[in-house]
Image 1 (tube, rainbow, N blue to C red):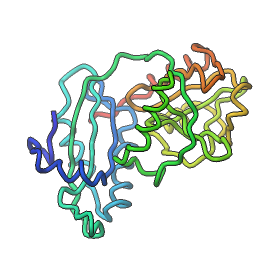
Image 2: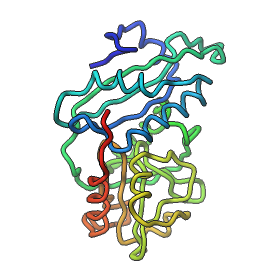
Image 3: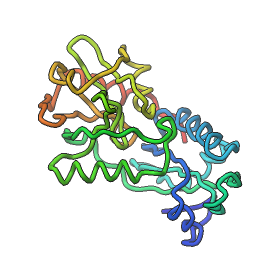
Image 4: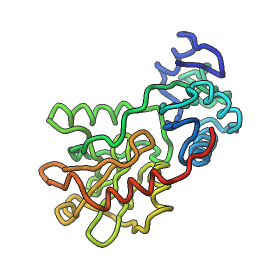
Length: 257
């Protein structure tokens, strides 16, 4: 389904979003009407709306609109996209009346199989904002898949890891969980795991990966997913720490949408 401000969306209303690609979003896995980290998702939407549009966003209104896309039971991924259908590409400074587009899709069964990533030099514009501008991320993902990988892992010019196109990455060095210190989007799943499990945050370069005992990807749609390799570096498909993180994440109580 797709609704704009609670009404069936028309093609004309989406035209501006498609042509200008200016806006922000969050995706939530809703299970039996509850969302892990719901308050963090709402904080993200409010923060990004202020950054991109200089406007306030009512989280209760967003929740009302999102509930319309959720079945009474089962798992669904709901995406909330905020954009201004009246944005003028020549005068984006006038875009200050954002509206809420809610879409949904079936949620995948968890856990997903391990993924293999190809490193790719790239830093997103405004990494702290979950932008709808996914061209570069998808281009790097496509290139990685054409080369036989599942996805791309972004690194800077010095080979320091940051994030995947739509996921965060973490590592285990045998002693502790490590989250890369880099310019990346602080994902909701990553933040929930940081609250649940002791960790360190420090730069992690590609040269450090052969010394890691495990790596994992996180986002709201997939939870915790093993990373079985980066470039030619092979990592375990299973590890006790990944099982522990997955268990801790699933034990986070969902907030009622």
